Length: 592
Image 1 (cartoon, rainbow, N blue to C red):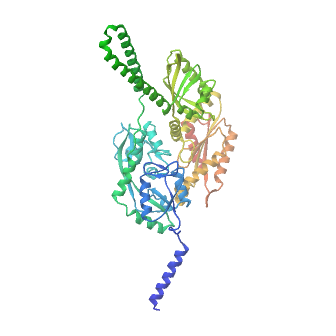
Image 2: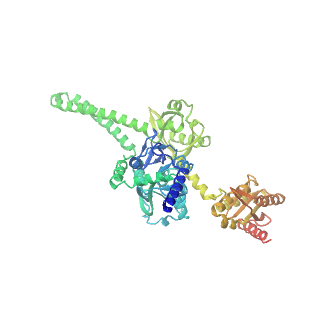
Image 3: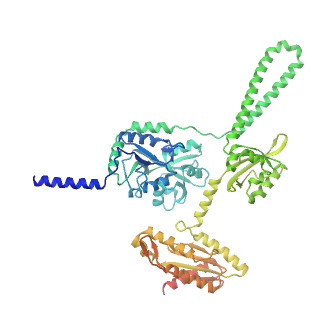
């Protein structure tokens, strides 16, 4: 054997050993486990009976058929669970996603098989957007865990992000004016806006840098699987892709019901019947002209029968509208619910029979709102002015509370006065408003009060202290040695340290105290009703708490803190005076 042949054999042996030590599953003997986004219409969706549908579903079926591979869908509740299962190795591939740096840590990617541009969605009155910098200072609602959420958070720090779970929630916030815009894929945007009937929303601009280059993500250890799938992706042509898109992008429109038109039809039908009856009376009195009018009367009776049939159809249609309305509908008479539609039962958790059996409709109202509801109900019945719309909370059968908007009018119900009330579920909007309020007043990293909330609370505490002659303390803390932590281990570790510091400081404070983060590594403590010995004791405890080592994973970090104390009324009687005094005292401590 020649030296060249010997080297070749040795290399082959090494390659064979390496292959055997990192052997992949035999994909001809077992199916590929695939995770998907279970609710990303029209691209992909998992129906309640487990059927995988959508544009991507059709294309993935072609890809796996051409790769001669079997596939099984791993069911997940949402996109975040999909990412977690993939990271845990519970699925071999993710069927449709963008390539990002974070995902590249555990996935390799095929070439893109579907390209979909991202667009900005706003209300109709918003001007055209050619650059995301035009949204600086604006509120943008985005589904959390998506690549566009990560990119906007990274690239545009002055855009306020409102994290939501679904496209529906994002568009709903824009529709209600709570968010200024959302950024989503063009295909998903067109589908969702048309499906939900949000025709006061529009595509305000395309973000050319944010195109969705959608691929298959494959676990890094499955190299041969990546090659098979990438080769199959390369076989897709424009006709394959357009056929999949055209099968799913055509959707049915949802229209709002026109209640005024329904009532007009009913009133018009009743008026026509009344006119026909008058015609019949006139014909009776004009008996001498019976022969001449016989043909007219026969035609009139035929028309009357037709109109009566239309009236019955209108009544059926009106009843169907009430039973299928998105809002809850309640008719209240003598403090009892005498009519409720299925949506009202769904919202309250009661059956319709149980609703009607309640002693009073006030049992459906949160105790704090019963006075307002009772007052408005009485005013309407007495013909007085009452608000047309107001927001209250419904007390559901399981005793949970639901935010709703109620609008009501006085009606005649079987000859007796009653109120007709429309009840709209606004829980998503109220939750978003609470989240926005929390974001405006709290530090996003630590969850502590921010500078704005700190000043507001300090002003309130000062007013109380002046009125009741109490003392008040302000403690200003600045971490020593924090910058080297960022320089050595990076900002992620620095952020972990700040959260750990916040938790440790909070553990040494009273429930009545306020801890705020007002800068990078600056914290402020407000202590109402604080005497000097107690203030000194707390300050010493905070210093000792920070000096204890912090264990962040495998990293042990030691830092210290400098602090300054100011108290009312000794060191000042205004917000600015107390904060400045505490700040100066902190720097004096730091220079020691």
